[in-house]
Amino acid sequence: MANLKEIRTRIASVNSTMQITSAMKMVSAAKLKKAQDAITQMRPYAEKLQEILSNVSASLDASEGVYSQEREVKNVLYIAVTSNRGLCGAFNNSVIKGISQKIREEHAEVKVLSLGKKAHEVFAKSNRNTTDGFPGNVVYGIWDDLTFDNVADVASVVMKQYREGKWDKVVLVYNRFKNAASQELMMEPFLPVKPVESDEQASSAVEYIFEPSKEYIVEEMIPKSLKVQLYKAMLDSRASEHGARMTAMHKATDNASEMLKELKLHYNKARQAAITGEILEIVGGAEALNG
Image (cartoon, rainbow, N blue to C red; front, top):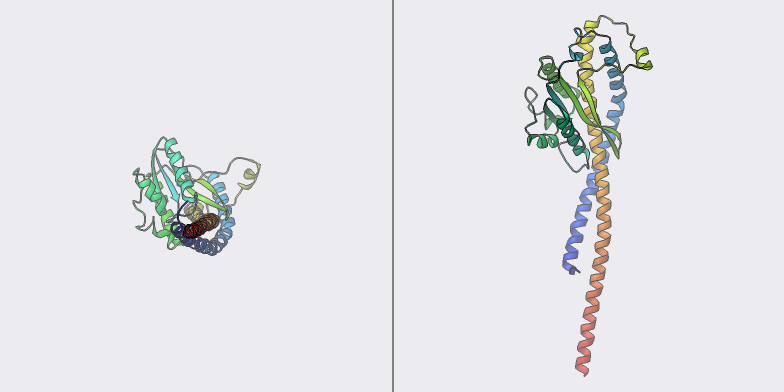
């Protein structure tokens, strides 16, 4: 059994760690409320806009919609949305593992635009990262000031590169916020824009009156819709990060509390054993003197 000094040191260490994890849990909980409100308000608008976008794309000829043209896939861009920090469970790893699996399956050249430090660090090892043409702080700084305008700048570069033929397919990978304890990995086609699946509900929703014209819709609505789609993914990921970190820190705090109880029990047993040993020594010494 460890001596009393070692156990006291471990108790102090675990207690200090528990205070840190508890504080991180409370900070994440406070940030989660704001992030959850933002994605809850944004999601219905973004999903409806995406539905309209897909329906409009289905009604356009290939020559009319540059963003909906199907072509041979030779170069693929994955947009990986992760965080700059860890200590959030499997939040970052799910995105990284998902993209790594797709890279092994793809029969094309794959590059990764990492919106977050964690993905950038991983894919830098395999030389998959690309930041050419994007704002200089796109990897780390986008989370420091997450606004629609900053995200729209990134989406604009992606769309420009797609129009120029640098990418034949763009896929958006992020964690969709469900609740504080649950996130869902999403791999959404970003470009080309996919039409709605052919079913009864979709076919009934395809009829649109275009005003002023289809060309205006292509030039104005589709690019804006793609920017909104990327912004929604960023908001989803931010809420998911805070939820995952809050859950992870809650579990870490609980584990530290259990460990603290066990250490205190061991300390009391060791202290009792030490006292018993001292009493026996005193009794033995007294008997030796009397004898």
